[in-house]
Image 1 (spheres, rainbow, N blue to C red):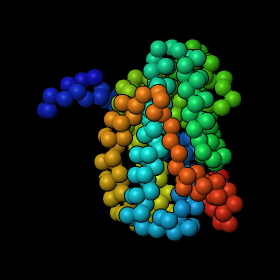
Image 2: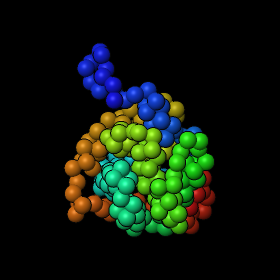
Image 3: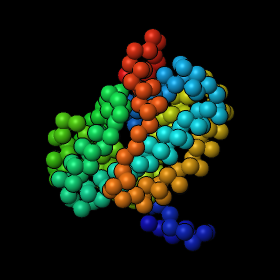
Image 4: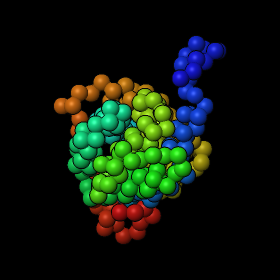
Length: 237
């Protein structure tokens, strides 16, 4: 980490910042934008129909779902990988997959996880040999692979958590602009307002003890389950 001479704050090194941007990019070929995470059914039923309701839907999922599952377990996966404790990493990977409340949410997680693992295996200068216990898993969570990529690219844990939040928010706003639909300026306003929620989500997840991990959002779970039989779909189920 480098010191910001203007403000006296620690700043990410340019290479690590660029690696974080690469990991969180919409161009990362993992298929994230093939899934709406239940949002397509929510718009079909008019639960989400404008910028304000989209904001409420995404904030609720971030603060009550992602914070207590993905972020809390991303931290534990990162630390397990950092400590070379593959048994612990496998345990948290399985725990995370078990937290998915519908077949569609589970599918999105493992499809994206395998896609990111294939990408890491194909990149130059990435040595995955010592992580074979993870790379050989039949099912690996996107969160687990995200943690592995962040560790290999020397991205600090708080930036990793923040970047994961951005990945989720960006995906949901992109889906909302297509489904509601929203204009590009409305989408950017959503990104600005939603990104203000990230610091609180990361701080909360960082403080959670193991017994507090887990969440249930019945509306999201049913929306993603009912999406499988929705008459017309833009997104994968």
